[in-house]
Image (cartoon, rainbow, N blue to C red; front, side, top):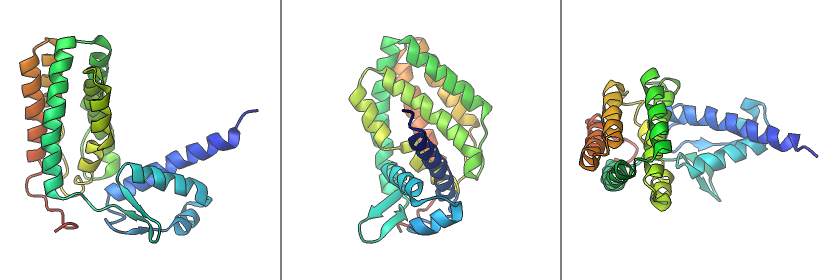
Length: 225
């Protein structure tokens, strides 16, 4: 017997995730703000079930925190030190992945990287979440294809579970991004991998991550001091 009700709930939860994530990234809900399930259910004219599901999924992404006493709240923006440590980790892991894929030259992940680059080239930047999310998703897809194509599933999962692109997106309200250089940096990574040049692939990946971080120079995480 078809489970129409279950499918409907999943679709509703997807929509609620989209709405709440956009509001968090746009600072409509400030870091630390309480997210009251009953109030959200009334506002969105829904039952509490898809609200709870959405908040649970946003908690798994690190955008929301859950407490048995206080309920759900918007997670604080990670500190500058956390982002700097994330940069070091990504250079080590993704630099290795770029080398590994350049050596393997596996066609499927390289094709996905090409598709992601095309999507990025069609996208634009901006300060609002609805402006930068398509570019952010294309950027994420590019890196995930490279990680998965490197042939180490544990490494790919470890990076994915940190949700690096989503956490960087939390800074965009303060420092809107010009994605023009990102397109060129991705192109350089892909060209080196397609050419099978391991050293050039690692250099291009490292240069891209460092440049991405420097584009945030001057931001301050007011929430963390």
